[in-house]
Length: 95
Image (cartoon, one colour):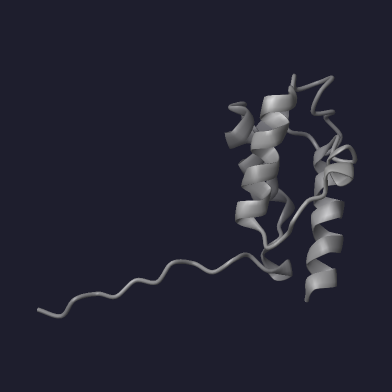
């Protein structure tokens, strides 16, 4: 019997950045329904993100996408739109 060989997926690239994928990832991290993550829903004011959740978001984004987020950039991540724009810029710069 032939054994199937599986390879681990590589890091995401700019072409892998999709707003709906990002929305789903954020909903999973925050344990909310994906419909609650609107493009402009404020993470802290509307979704109750605290510092521990913000750290988890950062860790997961860095694991999913080949980016490193500086501490000062984290303060820019207030909404899905902000997060998408920052990831888009970083992935474009890296490609």
